[in-house]
Image (cartoon, rainbow, N blue to C red; front, top):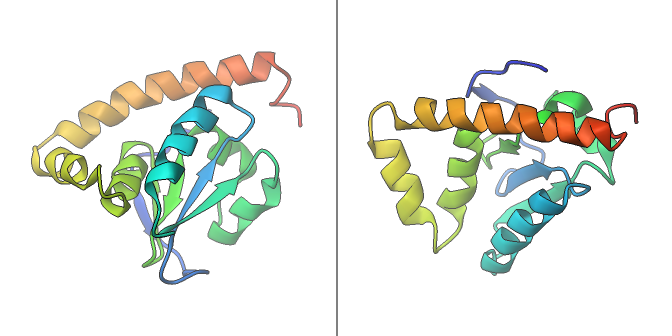
Length: 138
């Protein structure tokens, strides 16, 4: 598994005003969480990209399909690429009922790295489980 840090990398924005979320639509748990966020995105501020159905879409931000399947990736409207918990924070900043959580998580020193460590362990478990389902060999 790629061990990406909770990083922010600048890429040229494809859709300059919208955040893009790259998610595993083949994962039932991921689909439920993303569906929840989509219901809250009534303003259409986020571009939701199912990399399970459209694996080539992550190439637009310079991320391999395997890396994107292993950790949540979000490209902000300014072109910054976020992975892991910073990706969730980028999503939350766009959603009315989650903006407070984004501010809180970002304001507490050391909280994002701690949460990202826990998320990394969960993401590895989820990826191994998806591999057992035969997704890794796609």
